[in-house]
Image (cartoon, rainbow, N blue to C red; front, side, top):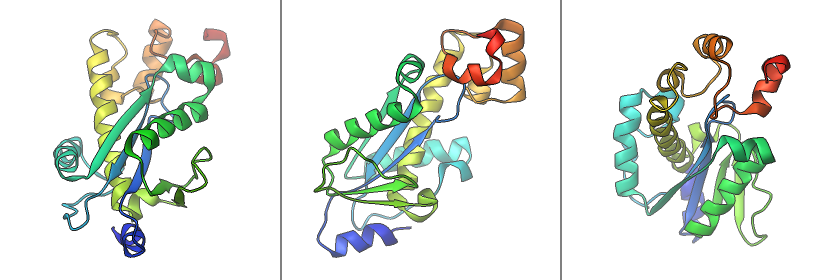
Length: 200
């Protein structure tokens, strides 16, 4: 899982930043981007793609990651920002903030390059990067834990939608709650328009 990082460490780069986002396709709540600069020599401790882990494993690994990494950050943009600017712009905005915060030498990304990076910043986008890079996988874990916690906290403020169960994604239960209650302030109206324009 450290093959990509080791390639750049061998070239003398020190701050190799992996980034990944969660919540891109959700109907409600924020999109969250995580960024991790892994410490050379630190063990991976079973870190892998967050989607392959249970909630308990993600919580445990998130604690390990944040106590072991050289640096890390999570940044979110809420549903209002997503509706105003679009999901791609929301993700770019989060990535831009993380790069400014962590000042990497190299950027590793899952599938897509970051077009706003300074030309001097080396970057590599890898298909299924969260399965090939420990830094990207670690970023996906801390982002997932951060966003899941947020959605569970919001569940009590917006009862009747089951946010703590589906975390804002388009499950059958979520669609049923939407049909019964209509959208709440957490819903991305631009996403709901694709589901049923007559309800938005």
